[in-house]
View 1 (cartoon, rainbow, N blue to C red):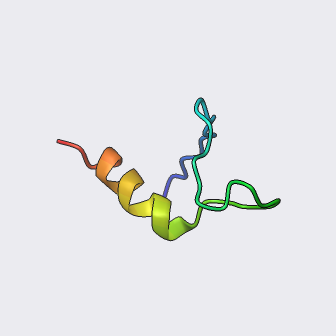
View 2: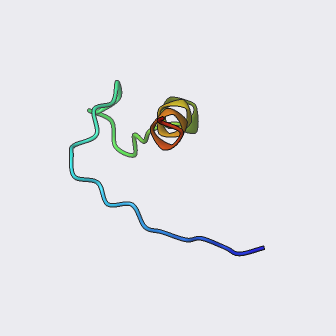
View 3: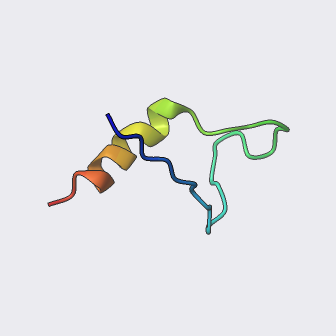
Amino acid sequence: MDKLEFTLKQHTPIIHFQHDQDGATLRATEVKPKLDRFIIKP
């Protein structure tokens, strides 16, 4: 099986409900459904 690797570059600021806290990150549960819809777009 072939392996496909790529690097994502962020062009916009992260808007997060904990933006004022150090170390705040996006959770996979926030990103994955949106990324899947983008990839599977007809």
